[in-house]
Image (cartoon, rainbow over all chains, first blue to last red; front, top):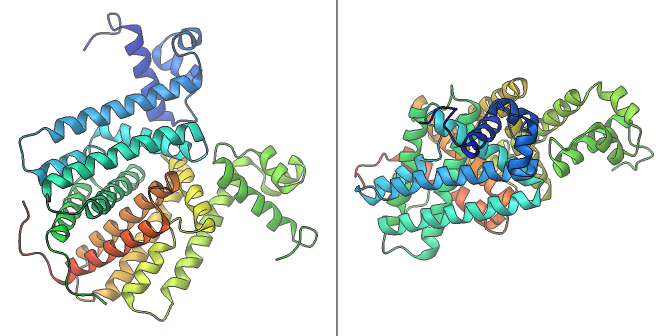
Length: 204
Length: 204
């Protein structure tokens, strides 16, 4: 890893934006605060990004890039499709410091997107790509399943993962990494089991 | 419903705070904006609530009250335990306009709680009460299940519901009310089925 002296300015500023969003939340991310973290003037931040909005968009892109890179690695591992599915989903759970930061940044952007239409469009398009990816991996686990059944299962797993990520980000005591992983494993198994053999009995 | 003239001031201001948080998000909720919605001076708002922080705390309390009232009604219905479980969980899904507003307010507070420790404590304590409630209803469905198994199932259902609520709030086109309800019903059925008969086969 380069020291502060040799690290290119763009990387240093990018890291400062990321750190500010992760620590202070979206609304706490001012140009002044990023400049403090980067150890530079607010002028340099404005010169580099152009606006606070562009700075936030950059942080959003960094988040997508990190999530996608981790998912690509997990998807290309030489393991069973079921293992790959669980690994890709685990990529967005706050299981370690790096993913904890990512989950905080993700939750902040999700909330911002609720009342900011431009941000909402970016969020929705990213989420649909994610849905497409999870559906694709489920298909490799259950090649005979219908498109509808695969889509519903993908939504189930994504909802379970996003819900767990939010719960655990806010209350890590109750939702430890161990609990998150075991619940996700159960969700994956239940989903694949149900797809392999649709239920015959009604529960009341 | 009282008209603006006969409605008590406290109710009118409460509605204005709620509306502002639901429409403009937490960060967009300024004293000025609430005064605009209430059709009064910012002085009256400050006199009534004391501070912006107290105003936001009030909105958080309104959200809990609404959620709990709906859950109490659903839990006391004369239906099967399984039906009651699904009904209580549906209370926090954005299935109609009222619940859409609530889900937006909830997501905003969840994100704010990530970088605001006082808000986080309120959020965590509310979430633990919710976990306790869902576990209690699951116990009535599966009286022989162990405490651990009930807790894990409660977390599964809460995560699935919160995840769905967030996905649907941001992308209602992909996650329609119909899809949300059918996925929640499946989650409830899968959870209760699994508790009734633990899996014997391993899926790979």
